[in-house]
Image 1: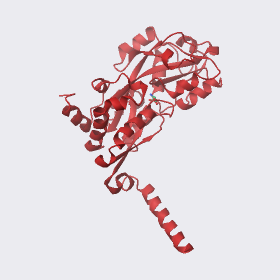
Image 2: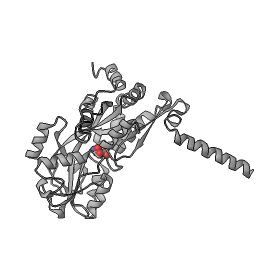
Image 3: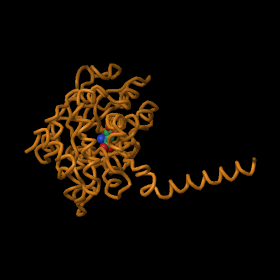
Image 4: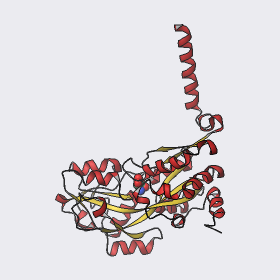
Length: 332
Ligand code: GLU
């Protein structure tokens, strides 16, 4: 009996390793069912629950579509674009500015346009948000000079936005501040511990990171990002627009008097030209046909309409998305 059990165990282990080793060929299509993964961001952001919301909508119909959507926490937009392009992820949530830069070969993809990147739809607005401790005395961008500031990990979207706005304000991110490259999920704790003075996060509101950072014992506030530097960025780049952080309603623990001006982008869902039309169609259809159910899953989606979910896309639409949008008359 013991022998039989150990033989069975060995067989099970071999089968298990087989699945891991040949993920693409075996696991992703086991029983004819396709498995796709959406890359998101840190667990205290809005991308992670957004991946969860999309997968929830689609997985209700798993049997009908023969499709199962899973979600992965990642380093953010830049990581997601690169993982989609290498085939490690089928989908990723990507800031609209990063989508534009990747497809056109600028910024992190300078001279290396990602021509297989495809747009699916856009989601919630994201604000370039700067949160500082009250004791740091940081009340404006100018006050960041000499301070320890988290501008974001290299795979994140916010790192580029922080660098853009600092540069536009005449602050050199390499020499005028002590720039940290922490992941967003670590930043709130580091601010509360006094190990950083402020952090940038390009993100929808409300989110877990700022809820955590504004409910600790250390007093903190959002720093307005406005004036000539923002005007210049909005005038120069098609993907930047002015925005407002609804502080009072979302973060009662912040010491701000009212809402705070800044600028921002949009979160978008991206994929690769190599992902099948059927899979992309199924995801778009489930989210758009049931948009009210989807919107109930996160307060950051309250402003979404079917029409504005086609704004902010700069890579070509994936044919699976195009097919759905044509069917329902959203595009010609
Ligand atoms: N916008 C951030 C990034 O691209 C992620 C925000 C979030 O996780 O909600 O890295």
